[in-house]
Length: 292
Image 1 (cartoon, rainbow, N blue to C red):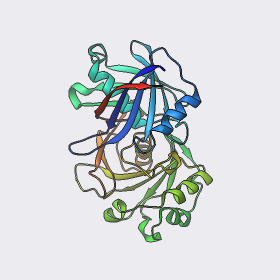
Image 2: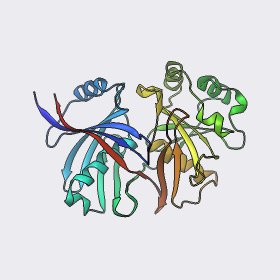
Image 3: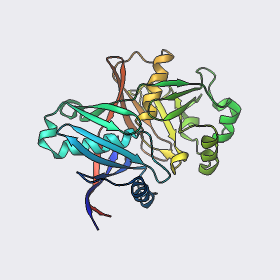
Image 4: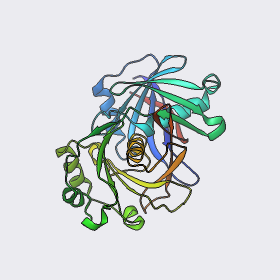
């Protein structure tokens, strides 16, 4: 039996919000097989959204692999925020580093920007967005989300963008309708698997807190849970959507995320050198050792 440093961390916490939970296992020089990582993630079902396996490859360079209880995840924004924010907070040498290189297995090399001193947040360069052909009709979307057709706004288009995960973006006409969408998890999982969709992001341009630019929800039934309470990659896709539709000029903005069953979480977006960055803070809840 081997012991690995372990933390349970909630990403995108803000005020009283609970964020999005990730488990982080720090491998140091050790290597786990895909089967071992999936088994560990299955053991975390219902406890965290994803498990991040982190291995340091150089003083300011890390390799991250992500698993949900169902499968490997191409890219996990909230897991990256959770893992790296916690490492920076606990390591004086890393705290003095402004940029850190993140290597991912499926989405290549990304950059983390340390902005804890000024913004109490770390920012990640999202994978370059890919604009895909929308694979489903508005009627199919309404049925999958278990909402009436008029709930989907015709003011903005439905779109399908990959900025780490293939994200179906659905505009919702009214704020109260947006925060009260609660579809059936298994029905939604079947819908996403049948149509090559990783996650569904719904949004409304009305917000509870007018300081935020928009309100979002992210449904991730494919990965073994209904809703992702705070998200990096899907909100990066939404940032690309806003740029495409002239809803955002690229300055620093925040999004509020969540349904009526929770305190909304906060996700930061900005545009730098033509690339979308998403960011936030995190709170470590458990720190210890994981035995395998």
